Image (tube, rainbow, N blue to C red):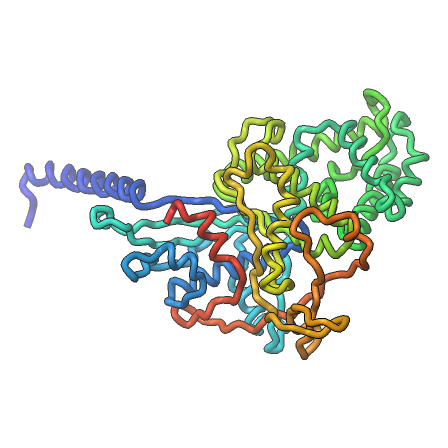
Length: 486
């Protein structure tokens, strides 16, 4: 039936009004019920951030499926014996420019279903670039009045980024001459000098006032990078700059990365090697500022910083003190110390500094590990007293169990685990973990690398079939970081 003229006039108006109201109501509903939090996860080299994110996400999904995988978080979400967590789901990648964190692939590796795994559980591959994964948590409100507004939706954007890049934060506000002087002083310390001898020998013959020669500059850069890699692999050092020299990212090396520290000799003249090194250093800083710190770092709401304090302790004094210096400087930056990123960035609201690999330590010694972390991070927290910063010990995947063994005629606490590449569990004695800065006599003992234990094989599945991943301390970290949002 044909519309009359009045109906033809009013119908589009009604439809337009209905659409406008629907869009307005949708915007209001999202403003009331949705909250978006950007959680950044990083760690000093080999601290286990890929495994940490995988375990955290898998245990959240299992918790939503009815498994008690995160008991402290579940207790925070309980009301009158009922769980207010109505669901957790992985969100599609959308149209973003960052690679997606391969959660499914990492779970497959842990379940023995990864490519080439042959049914044996294995540790997920390390990530070398920025990656992002988003979760949606649906949480029922506590009050009856609040429930009228509907279920709250917490969108958790998890950003995974290399710890080496975070170590470039102090470079942002440094000039080339100041950076060179500080770096060369470190390289000439007794522990580093031998490993960096080829580069230091090259530097003695290098004249920054001579005309720039690309081949010579590249040779110096390669020797410097080789020295950094030797310090990392042979001494266990972590505070090595620039970070992208050890982890370039997907673009690999680009020309502005071909530089190295050189003796400062006043303002460099145009066309000289010193001028080219300084220009490349400035270009590197600008690229990191624009491509990472400005684009991503300033947007973080919460931060997790993973540190293998135990590994550094047993790698020796040089490795431990180097790690301590890195942690202290990073804590200053994450808490918004003046001078970082121009001093204009507000502190990240909540920062969790985590000593990883707690399953290498028997349960009764883990509190000592927490105190050791506090002693290391203390200088970076300074007069702020750690406001907004919490300290934790954790094992993303529990790969051992506590036991006792006879050692030197006495019973000692050990952990039992299956070393990587082996089939049978063996006892491991971590020794004394100092509950504070190690005394001078501590360093007289022999140094050794911590073993890599084979992870337990986890059960895959979806929804209620997810079994979760055994861990130590992940629920405490999540409650501390996100408790105000729950």
